Image (cartoon, rainbow, N blue to C red; front, top):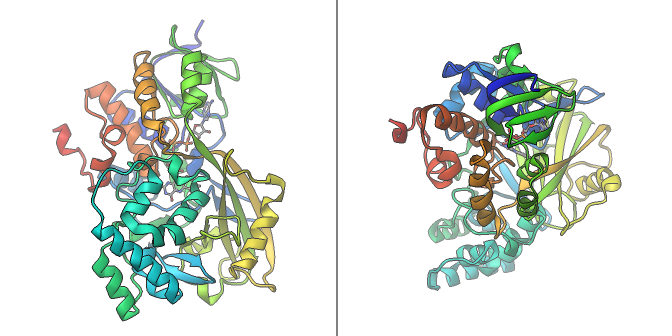
Length: 470
Ligand SMILES: Cc1cc2nc3c(=O)[nH]c(=O)nc-3n(C[C@H](O)[C@H](O)[C@H](O)COP(=O)(O)OP(=O)(O)OC[C@H]3O[C@@H](n4cnc5c(N)ncnc54)[C@H](O)[C@@H]3O)c2cc1C
């Protein structure tokens, strides 16, 4: 017999689950329960304080927003004063030097031979006929040419995704990569000028204290105690009888279940062999997040940098964030301590020796000159995220087109970064809005734009309510 009956059960108090719960409250639908396995809200967007007092995000998190509604929730979480605002400064470490991002607009920093190789590739592309790229590697070659692809894009993307770019589809890219404009490229080379300010995301905010996780802890505080159950994982889902059972033995009946678990894990909890087989073909990569806390202040070269990309083999990480630049309060003694977060990807195609990864990261930090021989390391923090990046693989959309509707036919709505497995709408703002929109659909019959129209929502600032909802 179920312990209780609810109109909605939401599994997971990450951004997606919190978006769903907050929207239910706003719509005057109090008959719901939010169940979270851990003691804290935030999921992959949570933060941790280590034994030495350093705050760590689970990978460098940056607050971008495509949505008015998301911004309203951010204000609800931390007000207007709870943030530090930053100019985005991202760089590529390559050939023993820093090149500003976007790489293609700063080729003047490369050795001359390589600069020419990159320009030659771009000129070939400009003359080539159009066509639909077969995969992400093909997209890179057609869009950037052989030079930029081979020097930077393809090695870098293998390092991030842990799968060969040829195994990935070309549709997810959207606005995420700045498509080159030959005139801007040539101007940068001729004038020897840096171009640092591409794109919609050139400013961002970060919580003044508590790391990114502070946002989600605060928002979870707006959900009444009776509507949430933390430290209790869902262990089985009986889709036929519309009940979930938790590890503590509680059983809850539901009309609608919103799950933010990774889709492959949901399939296992439902126990459906077809679903298990289908979702096991979705690719994903794991991420080792390594936090290094140091005495002193960042060296001059890192004083204003936000994050850096690493395409080469001289280090295991694909990205390093100067985390103390986001907020000095991310360290125990602001002003006399500083911190770096390095991310290392892993997959069956790119194995990582977990027991060595921290030492390998430190070696890489020395090799790339981010830290020097005299740097005093105060703390080494490591967390492996099994589900880190949902890979936009070539077969992904066919699997999602089968599995998500099949689940919905059984009152199961799988949403969020790994719930919907769509990388292009898997940041915090997208995830929260997937939660908001699935509730809007179930309560008010409105379309879910983020899930179904990634290019639309990513190509504009989405006012609330959407014009499409009016
Ligand atoms: C390395 C890295 C870097 C990132 N950088 C950025 C960035 O710069 N900007 C940005 O906006 N986003 C970034 N993200 C993405 C961001 O973390 C996600 O958008 C967000 O956390 C996804 O939210 P979610 O709620 O869909 O899933 P999750 O955060 O994964 O939340 C799922 C929740 O479900 C809970 N759960 C799992 N199993 C059970 C169970 N059986 N029962 C109950 N609860 C369960 C988990 O504990 C978790 O709290 C990054 C992610 C990673 C991994």
